[in-house]
Amino acid sequence: MGLHMGSGVGVAVPGEQLFVSLAIGTGMASITVLVHFWGLLLLTWIMNRQGYRLRPHVNHLHRAAVILVVVLGIFALHSAEIWLYAALYLALGEMQHFEEALYFSTAAFATIGFGDVVMSPRWRLISVIEGANGWILFAWSTAFLIGVTTRMRVLEHDWLDRRE
Image 1 (spheres, one colour):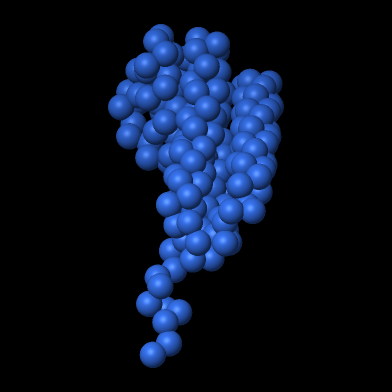
Image 2: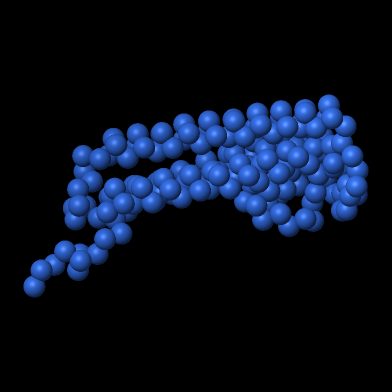
């Protein structure tokens, strides 16, 4: 079921199946966007909670630790979203083993698309939606991380502020 190397070329998917695939893919994209939204809100709350200690040029180690927590939090969010898609592929009977589903989902979400594990024509539209969804969530995470580092000014160097 999971290893369909070239077996779906030229196979038409009936209209009803197309609608079901679009509906499931859109539902999963919506779920992962909500997971991402709430996760970023949690990370923002953590930062705001610690914000009273985050002043420019004070407590560099603490600011670095907060950045590390944010990066690991973003990684955890993406991992959870990938696992949700992997669970869906198992539930649909598209993959035989969780490792295969997780591998495929990771490649699709990160838009790598190795092609050694592919989905049947019946559900492959979901994997394309996962790729678009992953691309958007990675961009959102990047923007969030840039905003956090800018806000914390953690990447500044002391030599930029020295006046001689």
